[in-house]
Image 1 (cartoon, rainbow, N blue to C red):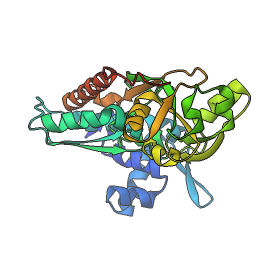
Image 2: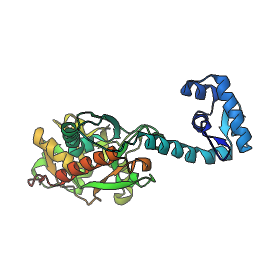
Image 3: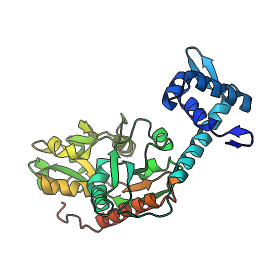
Image 4: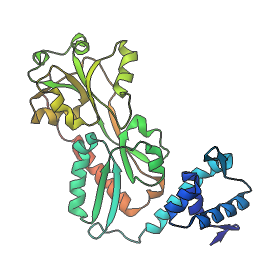
Length: 312
């Protein structure tokens, strides 16, 4: 099919070439011969009047025009794929779909687990694959590898896609019940003098909390352990004098299940705001809209759960 003299079949090849920057890898990805991929590249070069891929040592680099084409081509293909997947009606009882959701274990613990339970009861044919943030989160999202993301507001601002806040939470300090500090209000001096367990977000090597803490208090916490999932906190706190500063809706059930106690932090922090983000080309997909509604419902239910009033 042609549009303004352009063979639309070449869009798929162009997308692969722009991402792989290699004719052989693009042909393997598309399951076509290398000669067919080379012929498609020649046609693309003729149409655009540009080399698109130019050799740079042993590899290829994109020309300025090719760099400008990468985003629009990718978005066009994602919209096309979304359009052909639409159906005239949606019935959760008979729908068979698979959604990949990027979510922290905090979100799974607080409301996404409940959302998954409700979705399974209403739509047994829908499969949810939960994953942690990949190394290149932006590229994975733009490529359509992720159908939905749940992340803190400060990171969500980087994505130019539809998004909505679903839950807010404040912070508390979590420690073992045998900790010498458990019997009195936590002071700033106490906080700075003990060891801490820090939670990393995603694959980042730096700790976001430390970056926030240092410029405000001129001193850093002494981090004795760091981990990238909240569910590991109890085994790193029990029978130690360490403290973990975590989101309250995550900390409360941990304190209820393990010999841990919550203490109010000796300083103020901005609330955590969890945001749901989805690809713009899925905005009007009936199945996707239904999925988002179930998650919002579960998050609203989590807001209504009373938090432990015995935090000291």
